[in-house]
Image 1 (cartoon, one colour):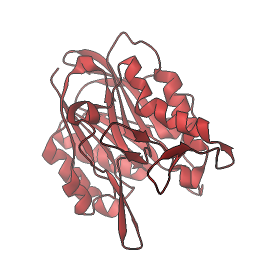
Image 2 (cartoon, helix red, strand yellow):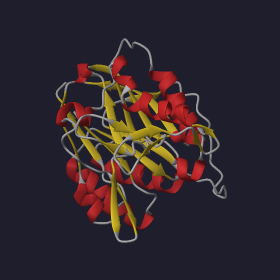
Image 3 (cartoon, helix red, strand yellow):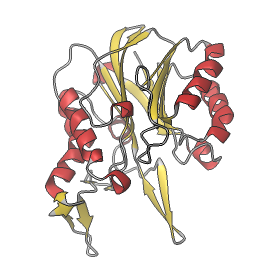
Image 4 (cartoon, one colour):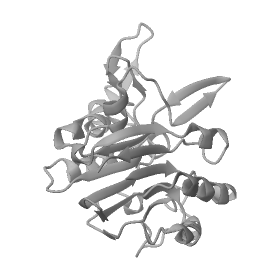
Amino acid sequence: MKLISWNIAHRTSQQHHQAEALVGRSPDIICLQEVTPNTAEFFQSELANHDYRFVTTSFDGRMPNADDKRNRHLGVMTISRYDMSTIDQFEIPWKEKSLSTSVNLPSGSAEIHNIYVPPGSSNGWIKIETLEGVYRGLARESSRPRILCGDFNPPQRELPDGTVVTWGQRIRPDGTIRTMSRRFGGDGARWDKGERNILTGLAEYDLPDVYRALNGYEVEDQSWLLRNRGREFPRRFDHVFASTWLTAVECGYLHDWQTAGMSDHAPIEVRFDL
């Protein structure tokens, strides 16, 4: 089974190229973030011609306000070649940022959780409240395998020794790392914990970071680039966490799609040996 998770950056001018690229990789499950009701309608129509018969969006039953200045019109979408149905959502501030489904894989039923976490730089503590809600919903034993994927907007850095630096921490000029006492008017330690619980804490509940489990921390990679004053700051914001029972055998980023301008994010692709 192949899964692709991709923040398509609500680029309507690129949607035909995006759909063509997805069909070319022939994933069994597609999880998209930063989808609008209009782009969701396009992808549902376009991909139906390629055996993607099962589609659901986070807008189902609740239409966003297109005039909302906080990007509330951006949601997520899951597309599958396997039969699927929606299941209980996470308790998070903005419901349209998550979509949970039960998918009937050839090997049995599995949960797919598709998430778009609002960036903290523009939404403050909404980011951490979203991450906390996701963690509360998944920090438990499960009788069936699970996949959590999407655009999470942490971490700040990952070091070769396995150290994960969150946005609740500051890297000093001498290279030492400290947790901030305050972050956007709140507790810096809570911010650090909110990100860290997802990035590394879910491994305790059989949801390890697939990319790091397969590639280790010696490999430096990115799914989004911050460009500032002629410098580039690579960020690995897009992740897949999956139950070990699903046996992930390959995971990487499709940088060519990012370079081609289809999105400012590189998709993450995982192949499972069910």
